[in-house]
Image (tube, rainbow, N blue to C red; front, side, top):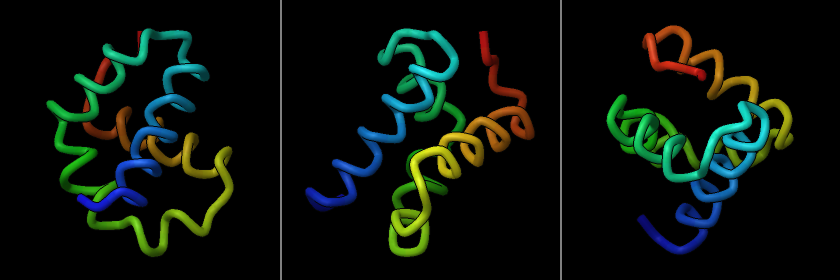
Length: 72
């Protein structure tokens, strides 16, 4: 993962954590354990980073729901 991808993933984690009212570390661990970071955000960086913060946040939360990742 290069620096721009790392910045993107970090921003997404922060945005999701803020929306869900969860600690950053909790959201990071859940996204990492469910393979959303390595299997979706990192490889999808090129198209994903062109979308709005709100869109990406909604998209990741929807993906978490689909994968059965706890949102509380």
